[in-house]
Image (cartoon, rainbow, N blue to C red; front, side, top):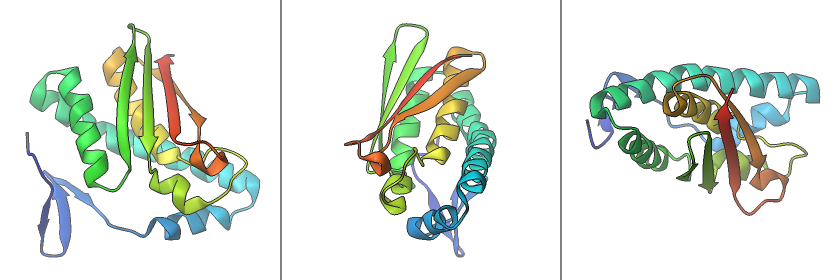
Length: 159
């Protein structure tokens, strides 16, 4: 498995996957400008899109290592390298997976919110939880910095 991202010809790649550096406040500004119902729908769509695309990366990482612990360690490293904050996974038995995120760019850029805003992390965590559980998963953001929490927290169980 590759240990780092490559930066060539104005592009950032992790294998065949291209990434984009974008100001977090630009993305947060898009969501803040939407009416509440449209914002909720857009955040759900964002989570689903990240679940799909991020799931492909996670499946590739798992295929490379064949080890779920290595997969979670790789994701912690990649999340930090891509500016998605510091991720830390905790496993509770066979049917609970927790994620804590310090310095989520989605929450810190959004500012104060009435509901969690880390939809992209929710989507990625859903894809990971499904690989860990070997079946569909339910993921909820249980605490968000944008809502006043000290860190963003996510909870996953088999669906």
